[in-house]
Length: 253
Image 1 (spheres, rainbow, N blue to C red):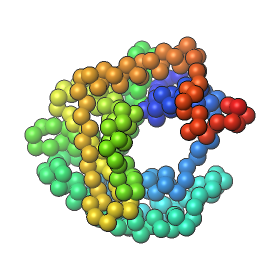
Image 2: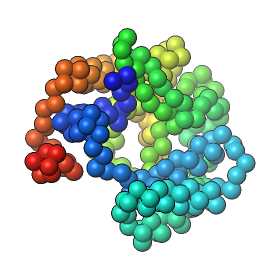
Image 3: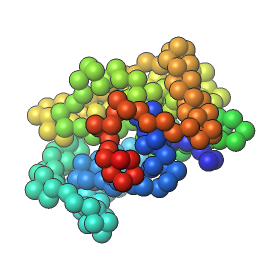
Image 4: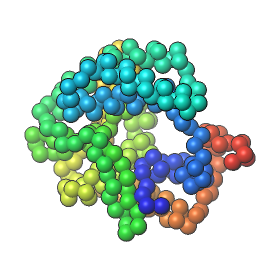
């Protein structure tokens, strides 16, 4: 094991044995669906718009979405074609609101990076791996880490405050600052909710605060996971069995 990503950490927190089945044993029970295909296509459009590439956003989105759906077909993954067809006009309606929402939220800003790779040492053996969707810098000198999240109509207060949702940005902020030698006080983090079925305000920004205590808790979870993975301790979290795709399968009877 040379690195750990936030997705891997989240899976370990869900259930250490689930982590073993997926990351150690290589059992991939979830290979995507129409929602992940839509999310990937929209993410690609966001990146191109952020970098101010010369392209046709609507045509490119349709082609990207078709490519992702074709990949699902090639991988023999079943998905809801009728729902996927409904997503095409939803994505097309969402795209024009991305840049205006950025400008309204941050006012004046400069693009620092898009899809910035993090591969930052946690210790002498393991790195933290991640990709930051976007980093912008505002006139007050602050850096803003943005993570695009596609959703149907938005998030409720419970999801917005869920540690296993917000820790992603907490750790991105920590390792971004480590990578660049930036004072954490000069970095803020935000989820950009791309709301597929919303009638208005299709792009909503949700700021995530990450103070010293929250950062300490996120790092504590990260080091706990690494310690137990290193010791090959793969306990089953029985409270999550009914939410697990491996429940009552040969891999986890």
